Amino acid sequence: MAEINRIVILTGAGISAESGIDTFRSAGGLWEQHKVEDVATPEGFARDPDLVLGFYDMRREALAKVEPNPAHRALAKLEAEFAGEFLLVTQNVDDLHERGGSRQVLHMHGELKSALCTSCEIRSPWDDTMANRPPCPVCQAPTLRPDVVWFGEMPYQMERIYGALGSADLFVSIGTSGAVYPAAGFVQEARQSGAQTLELNLEPSEGTHFFHEARHGPAGELVPRWVD
Ligand code: BV8
Image 1 (cartoon, rainbow, N blue to C red):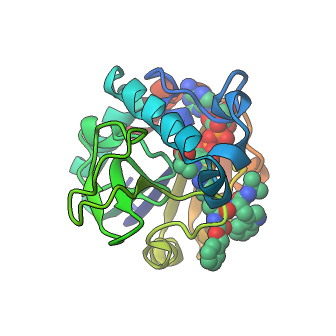
Image 2 (cartoon, rainbow, N blue to C red):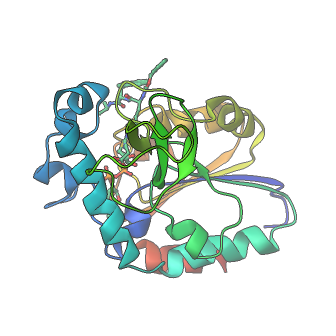
């Protein structure tokens, strides 16, 4: 990648699919098992906190049983070897990028293994269950929620992301349907800044026409081949 100096990568649920993590919108995916408004909105949490805490407990438990796949490891290799600026933004709340060797991961939708206390508003590392209302490790109040960004909530570090998109010369989107904003709009931001844009996905995403190039197939095959 001689002429490329600044890379921004966006990943979605598809990069973790071959590790055995359910995606959201593929057949049998997470959203088929649950209505989004019931488990991924503040209103759903207010209405039935036990349902929501149980949904995220189930996903956190599933995460402990799976491993990163070659796509995660290829991105870690690229981060280690690339001499320019490199930003990995993920919509995923799993820790497979980190377990695959990535050192800097920007979780714009939060993380399953983090808890947010709605009383003291402090985040704590978390890999236990929450449905039994454990005390916040900081203020001891029984008011933990998953530290994930629900629909209608502002994703994390948006200024940093838009700053990187504004100066990127390569934007690569991996394993995302392009169904959720603002992440789905990143390709347009990158194009406006003159970046080359590449989609690596099992099938054409909703925004595939915005990309200069699109390659379709499993991330576990496409990403290592692209990195090498
Ligand atoms: C916000 C929570 C505003 C954690 C999630 C325009 C602009 C801004 C907002 C909006 C807008 N229009 C509408 C909105 C509102 C909304 C939205 O986008 N709605 C959609 C449904 C239309 N957006 C929001 O609410 C966002 N917040 O805008 O706030 C604001 C402003 C000011 C102040 C306050 C607020 C928040 C969005 C975040 C919601 N939280 N997750 C969790 O439970 O995980 S979103 C959820 O969907 C996940 O995070 C997931 O990452 C995300 C996107 O899904 P994908 O990752 O793409 O997964 P999906 O299953 O859809 O697709 C998988 C893809 O992989 C498929 O294409 C498949 O083909 C492919 N694949 C499968 N297997 C493989 C593969 N690819 C390669 N290899 C394989 N093996």
